[in-house]
Image 1: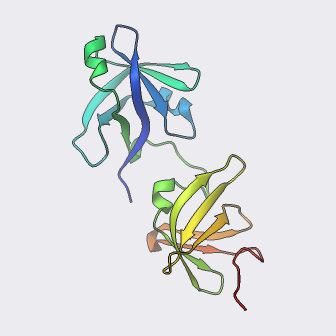
Image 2 (image 1 turned 180 degrees about the vertical axis):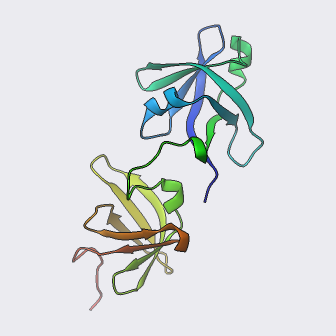
Length: 174
């Protein structure tokens, strides 16, 4: 499982005292209020530096962070286009039968009869419910609604998901 999560992207500075403006990349932007420390880096795969959170404000669709180690606009400007990253242990606790998207990507998807439908390539956020894009070995994609009536089981340790496809979701060739 992935150890770190990107939860925001720094898009600009805010004021002259070193605050940074962030676009949240999380379903719950209020989660920033719970953070005591975080990492900043160009991506998860690069070297990350740890920072302590001094303050959090919310402005429209943005999060404004004040970090203890950043006290001027010039230093804050150097963080533009980098990501705010947290350790998995600092992530919000999920409800039962809820999963982090990064844990679902590349999981194998099977129907209830055990037929391999492919792997979960991407998750679309549609507003009402997520949609899983499953790609099979021929390159064809299936769009599966992420509903409790459809998703019968997720087994992260086995990298496996079992689904009950609604009739007509897959075009059966005659």
